[in-house]
Length: 214
Picture 1 (cartoon, rainbow, N blue to C red):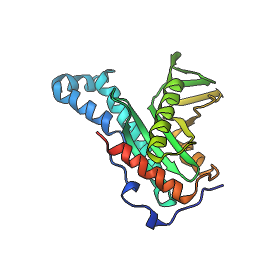
Picture 2: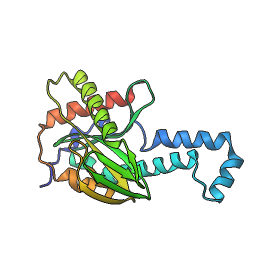
Picture 3: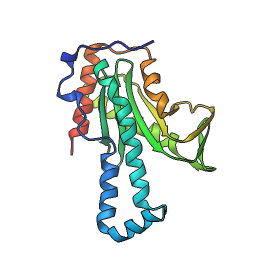
């Protein structure tokens, strides 16, 4: 069932994203290119796996998911990209607020096979701590939004979204569902609305506030 739309007059300044999708990763990539332009030229020429390439792919994955999320805005959803959390340089790729609730989306752009069995996620046969990271991000955002809005109860759902990966999902993680990029928006729209319009706008304002802080 599709979530209800909200009138456009409710979408104010807090409806636009403060930062671009993948902005932080793209800035890191550009700094590495600027520091070693000749090295970058040859590593790209020979298709070598480098830190610069990793940041670039990360940025591209976030940019692609950001584009997929855009059609949600006229339906009453609010989206912030590349939201910094804490003082360690950590960030949330996409923070989404809509009638069904609040979602923290962690994007991965990988060409390897991804195997999922509950809390165990393997990429190319190697374990990754994606679930633990997703749970921590959702907890942090829940605390931040609750403090700003003074809500006593708020559930923030973490999602792990893979771009171009070969996904084999034997069992979904309990708290961090794994999705292919093409599944993301249909999955969000299929969720039942749990928030009133005023609650969505208040949470969107709070998310905008988080995104604009230093």
